[in-house]
Length: 271
Image 1 (cartoon, rainbow, N blue to C red):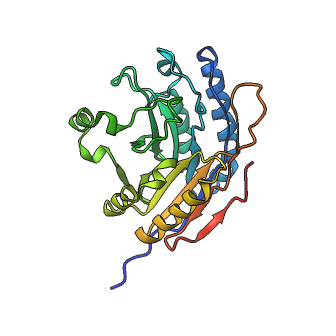
Image 2: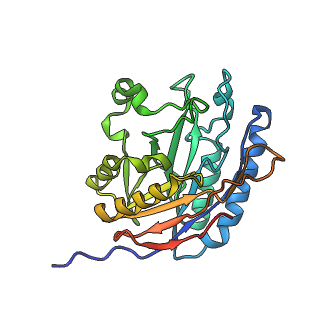
Image 3: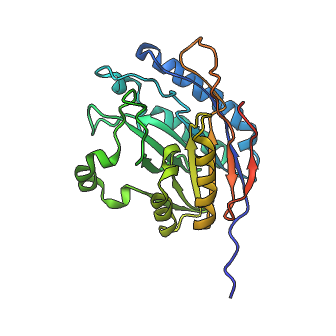
């Protein structure tokens, strides 16, 4: 007996523009501007009844500022849940979508640390999934992010092993997350498959260097060998500080990859 077909729906991969929150005193304004810009672009597409999943890029709310001053991330980091996820949740309720993205998270339960964290919010506005990136590039010490592996024993004691690679069953399929540099570790993608994932939300921030084609090919291979979709959203442009020119290294090439590893849809560049 053939299995019942799953629901058919559209996915929005939004190549948001991000301004980096370099000054803690300006943090709230920069984050709110990034948030308003992204949701204003997303709203007319997300409001279509057939759109059920929205994926935003890595760092879409506060960029990836290179700062290690004491207390910086306590001021600049995003809380999950927090006011930003409340605003995203209101958008999900308004448009009846699931929404994923990735931010630099500060959690008071881990003082002095910050995480690179992806999330999924449901149509009811609730935070359904939080995945803290397992494989981070620390940019030669400029971005001294914590991974669950850095604090493995304490992390598993607090949350259990399933919290390392969480998944969530939803009406649009079982969802999981992987972020940017995670593309280089096929074991992570295989575990997602073993947990029943059907769509991997992949917020990413990929610089146009010689590495990008390999990462892109790896994501297509992961989709094909694990027989699931990969919804990969990359930034469209960025500014390292307010008033700075947009960088020349951007980005784009967001893609929906189907379970054959085929590019079902792909943006041809930034913007």
